[in-house]
Length: 201
Image 1 (cartoon, one colour):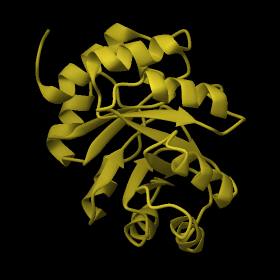
Image 2 (image 1 turned 90 degrees about the vertical axis):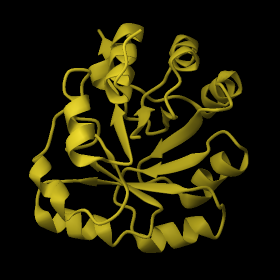
Image 3 (image 1 turned 180 degrees about the vertical axis):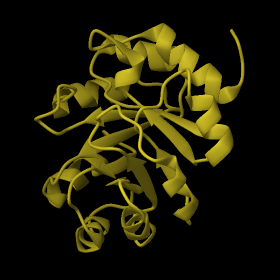
Image 4 (image 1 turned 45 degrees about the vertical axis):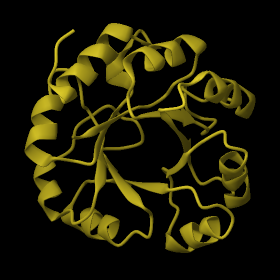
């Protein structure tokens, strides 16, 4: 079954929602220019409150690999997500410092982007329309993907089931579509998760 990642967790209430609804992953954004940025101290507190069965993903944009590895080795996060211009050389350096799984994000605008993503040395790739833009991309490009991937970009409670059934990604990822006035909305998260898992409660 397709797994679920809820990104942009930034409050204790968000963590409570996650513990109640149990996505497989939640994301903490460490890019300071993001409106969903959390400090290392906040993330550590949230990780302590998070159900142990949910994996915490740290989202970084062109951060020094030493700093990224520190988050992983301090067990603040369980996976690393690279959302900048990082390359395979960067990934190799990061792997020399920590052994947690790595997700590399790519903007999927054209077939070349998919070809590049397929060649990533990361454990998983994430395909998006932009850096948290909340917009969809041309899903016909997905036919060129040859490895497990996270599907992001414009997924909502209304369209995620169809996307999961048609493309069968490893995981689906959403953030802004699960908010009301910039705050995570428990009912939207519930509807999103239920749609992926094909259930009602």
